[in-house]
Image 1: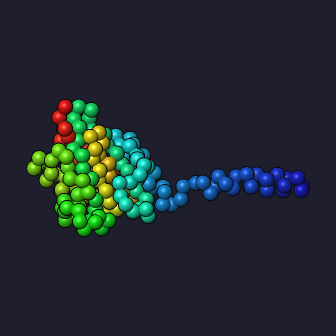
Image 2: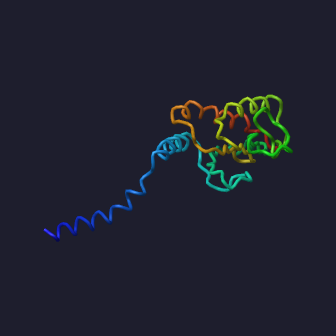
Length: 166
């Protein structure tokens, strides 16, 4: 009998670290959002955020531009984390780097309207020649994200072709 008790205790001690590695309640919704983005053409970016805030834990959701249609390079930062010296892009956003080359009026209007619809925890929108990234804290529910993801993809399509011509 004592041997069985010792074996049971040993088995519990071996399995206990695995229980602590399970995702917590706050991580489960994130995994659904991440899976949805990956299944629908997005990629996750865990690199350095283009923001001078060490306390911000942001995840980048990356959408690649088509190879033959590059994007304009810019970085827009939400007002609450931006410096006052940065130029205003729209009521809640400032340019850390203004678009180069400049966006035409239609693309700029579409971008400004789209920026206003992003969740409040989306703090940085970064566009480079090959990718559009939205840096945010992933607070949105899966249901809302599923409704809004097509607008993110549509913005990528709108900005594609706005980059330097080769």
